[in-house]
Image 1 (cartoon, rainbow, N blue to C red):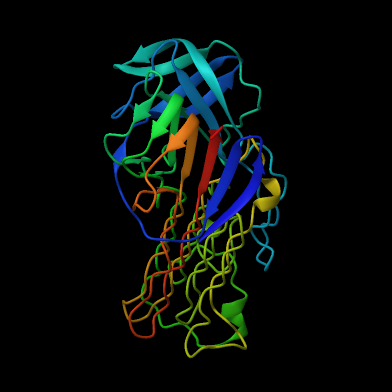
Image 2: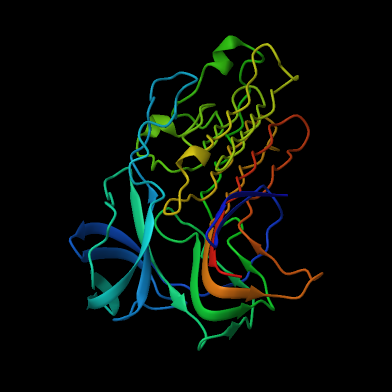
Length: 359
């Protein structure tokens, strides 16, 4: 199932709900940006396994996470959005020159400084991705293409530019490459169906399911576990046997299962991740939030699912055969059912597709 939004002037934003996962070949290079000073970017965590950063080539600068959390008290509002700041902003720039350390780029100087402000504080993440120019001018795929999985510093994005026609003979995906799902809890026989379980929204205790990852980079230990969402990352399951919540992106994620024995008076399920639909623009998109981990006491719970990443495609035209099985997708991992009694893992939210395509 697809949700289409902002269909205007040849720019298409497609937000996918949770589907299955397909893996394929990575084509981009990635690096974490640790400082921005005018046109100079300082780098770490460089991954050039698939493509390298070279002078005169183009890159995507993208703010993956920012210090956007609002409420941090132990309440149902924990993890609400404060100000969106620079989260999700991206732009395309050309490399002028670079320096290296140990064979990897250490700094990159752009031909023109970024237009956006990018924040590199402890609760923020910025990366650059090589913007692959394929074809001369047309390009036909030769294999499946995918994003490097997001690891907390780099990954999650496929980015390509085709001056002419992109002919699809293979699929392109950022499936499950987005924000990471939370881990299941340790085995613990917590109290059943009590108000105390319902009201644990943030805590540092592996007796509760871990929260999924979202657009705020967590550094505080007491934000790791508990029912509360953390922006578009979902909350973990609480006692007893609560399920993890579902991640959010274009829409809210769902609340996790109530827990043993379908406790509706004091539900223990993790809260779903926030919808970011109101923040999405032509220059701001997000990866899907991770699902929350389930709570267990019998060793049968499940981790939360990863969210989908981001696919950026610029082409004059995209052509493919009708009725085939090819796709361009950024799906999250669906909800993961547990064994008997224990809480299941919440599903990861779908990511984002951005097309600058005339036809």
